[in-house]
Image (cartoon, rainbow, N blue to C red; front, top):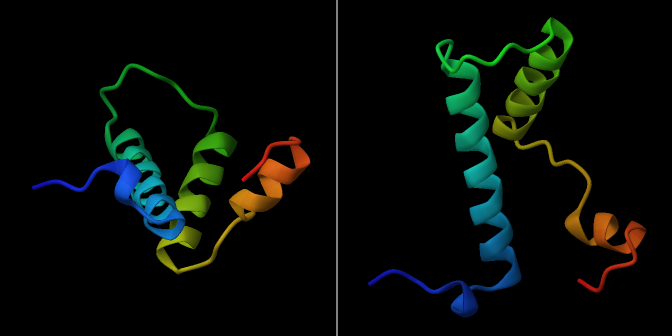
Length: 73
């Protein structure tokens, strides 16, 4: 039986989101037939971001982003 989002801890939800974003980026970068053209510098930024994620380097914490946007986290 699949776990419901309402049953997840904040850390489990964050992990799920990270995995989903990583998978989406991998699909996007690996699909040359998608019909979308990226500027070389944008593609390079996406590749570097993916490599950092795979290396365990974290970006800006969600709490910090929420705080900057005036959201309750």
